[in-house]
Amino acid sequence: MRIIRKSPGKRTTGRAFFRSLEFWHLFFRIVLIVSLIPLAVISFYNHASADDYAFSNYPHHAWEATGSLLGFFQGCLKQLHWSYTSWQGCFTAVILGTLDPVAFGDSWYAAVAFITFGLLIVSNLIFWRTLFGRRADSQTQRRQRMLADIAACVTSLAMIQLVPRALDMFFWWDGAVNYLPFYTSMLLLSAVLIQIYREEQLSAPKLVPAAILSFLSMGGNYATALVNLLLVLSFALLLLVRRRRGWIPYLAILVSGVLGLAVSVLAPGNGVRMEQEGSYGTGSLVQAVIHSISLAGQSIQQQTGVMLLLLLALLVPFFLLLVREWDTEETKSGNDFWSLPAMPVLLLFFLIYAASYAPTVYVYGDGGPMRVEDVRFFYMVTFGAVSELFLIGKVYHALREQACSEEPWLSRWVVSIVAFIVLFTGMYYVLPRENRETLTSLCAARSLLIGEAQRYDREMKERAALLNDPATDGQDVVVKAVSERPYLLFLYGLELTEDPDYWINRTVAEYYDKKSVTLEDINLEAPE
Picture 1 (cartoon, rainbow, N blue to C red):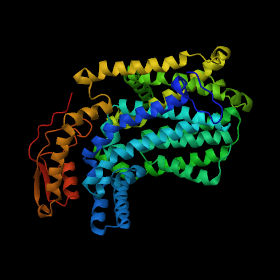
Picture 2 (picture 1 turned 180 degrees about the vertical axis):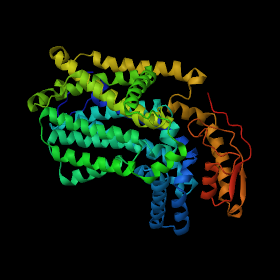
Picture 3 (picture 1 turned 90 degrees about the vertical axis):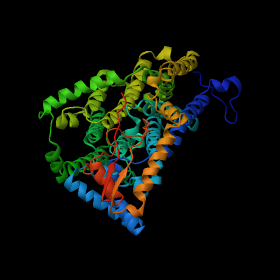
Picture 4 (picture 1 turned 120 degrees about the vertical axis):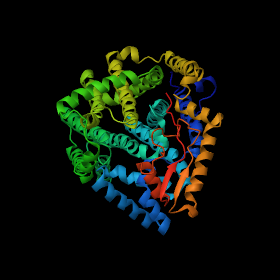
C-alpha cells in the first residue's frame, strides 16, 4: 500500500485515493458499520432469559414501587448484599447484573445489544489508538489514528463475527456483564499502563480513575481478574527490564487490583455456593497450571480458523506502515520495543492467555461455560494481533533496507485478502446450510429474512402480556413454549420448565409477582 503524501490543503483524488490510507480507513469503517446493521435490527426482537430475572428482581420491584432512581439503586444494593453473602463474591459483576435493562420493563431489553457491541468497539478503539499513538507532528498523528482505527475495526469484526457463541456475549445481559466489561477493562487498563510506560508518570486526575478501574476489574469472574492482574505485573516487569521510572503509578494500580480481588475472594457467598455446587477440580495448583496450559493450546488450535487468519493477514501492511512511522522516533527515544527477545514475549502472551483457564480448571476441572470461552476468544484475538505487530516490527528492523521501500504489493495484498474473504464467506458460510449460523451478522440476517426472529418476538410478547397482566398476580400461570428458537436470541437449556420449583421458574414468578409459573409443554431440542 503506497501512502499518498499530500501537501497541506490538497485533496487526494481519483485513482490515488483508492491507493491511500484514507480510502482503507473509510473502507473498514463502512464494513464494520454494515456488519452491525442486521445485529442492530434483530436486537429489537430480543427478550430477557434466566438470570436476567434473578439479578434484576429487587431493582425491578423497587422501580415499580417508587419510580425513582434512588429506589432503583437501593434495590441494586439489596441484590448485591444478598449475592455477596449467599452466592458469589464477584461484586462488580453483580452490580452490573442488577442494571439489567429488563429491570425497567420488558421493552427495554432491546438496548442490550447496543450496549454490548458499543462497549466492545469503543474499548478496542481506545486501546489501539493508545498503542499506536506517539508524540509527532499533526500529519503523523493523523496517520497513526487511521491505522489504529483500521486495527480496531478488523479486530472488532473478528470478535463479533467469529465469537463461539454470540448470544452469551452480546444478546444476553447477565451472560455478557459477567465477562465482556472485564475484557474491556483489560483494554482500558492496558491503555493506561502504556501511557505510564511512555511518559514515566501519570497525573493524579488520571491515576485515581485508573486505580478505581483496577479495583473494579477484579470484582468480576476470576478468569478475567487473573489475566488483568498478570498484565499489570507484566508491565511492572518491563519497567524493571528497561530500568525506567514510573513505579508509583504501577504500584498504586497493582495494590488497588489486589484489594479488589481480595474483596471478591473473601466473600461469604463463595463458600455457600461451593457447598451447594461442590468442587470437581484438580485440587492441586500444579495440576491446574499444567492442565490450563494444555487447554489453552487446544483452544488456540481449534479456534484459529481460516477466516480469523485472513482477518489477521489484512493487518500486515498496516502494521508495517505503523512500524515505519515509529522507526525514527523509536530510535531517537531509545524506547525500542523490537529489541525485546521474541520467544519470551510470545511465551508471556500465551501464559497470560492460559491463566484464564486456571480458575475454572482448579474449581471445576474444565474450561467452564461457553461464555468463558467467548471472552477467551477475545483475548486470543487481541494477543494475536499485538503479537503480529511485534513480529512485524522485529522483521522490519532485521531487514530495514528492504522494508523501507514503498512497494505497490502492499495495496495488492489488501485487495487480494479482501477478495479471498468474500469468496471464502460465500463458499463456506453462505452456500452450506449448516454453516449459515457461524458468522454472527449472517446468522442475524438469515433469521430476519426468514421471519424467525419476528415470530419469536411475537410469541415472547404474548408470554410477556400474560405475565404482566395484573389480573394474574398471585396466581399460578401457565405459559406456552415458544416454537421459534433463533440461534442468537433463544437460550437453550435456560428456558422455563414444567417444574414450578425450578430456579428459573421461581425467579420469573417472583419478578412478575405470580404464585408460580410453569411451561405448558416442552419440546426443546438444542441444535446440533
